[in-house]
Length: 222
Length: 117
Image (tube, rainbow over all chains, first blue to last red; front, side):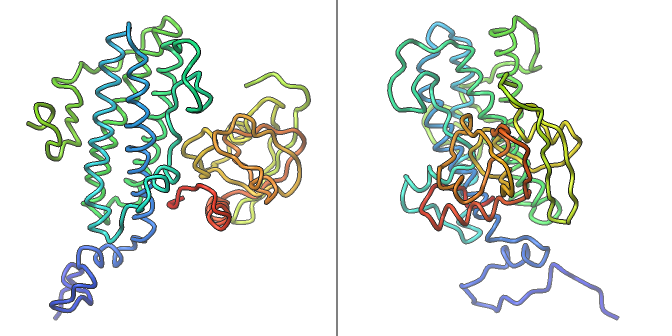
């Protein structure tokens, strides 16, 4: 009598360096690994190029709204953490970042979070943009990120626990970011109370779900 | 929804499984919103006219893409539309689930596109 052991099956020969068991297992379970890699690169580009970079600029234009600025800083650093978290998985699966930063930015799955009043980054704003407009950009950027990481969770659930775990950790924080910006925009724009239910991070960009390893001194993860 | 002249329009969606559904859309309404209001399940992700998850093929009719974040004249000439940020300018007939076709078109023409759509 034999007992099915799907985890013990496969076609990777001892010493084979062209294939990985950790990838073949995913194929056996119905994951289109090449498609998954492409989605992960699109999402990594969105975290790094569409949000981390442009949130830096948005944050600079929140002077006078110090509470907003601190929360924007948390989201900025945590989006960078998301990039750091998913990057190794792209290579584990056999993928690679594009060799051109321009190409990387162009394939981002979410649009660049341009500072309002700049005609999509073409020039400095004539006047400081209203905080409500900046919060709106931040909110919609987070919503796109939620949809993107939810898609990765949907694809990998029950089949690719490692990618699922990484995507779920990122998704947790994107959902929190959305709640923050809903709360702030509701009051700033509409005078309404829409609590996020959260308190501020213990340290800037603490990344309570997605922190992998520290990437800067004196900050999160140390 | 923006107040614009014209409409309401009839928007007909052809789905990959052969189902055909028609919903009304106001002139200033995004086509995706009209479809959802009509009870249709339509794909989308960025919802600002960027990532092509909502791409359709335009079989008949005209759309206004002035609110889309990344939409090229070449896309229009090839018959693609991003319905999350496109408003009807006439009655429409659209074939849904064209993200990969639009991605392949963009890449073949050296235009920016996410690869994982």
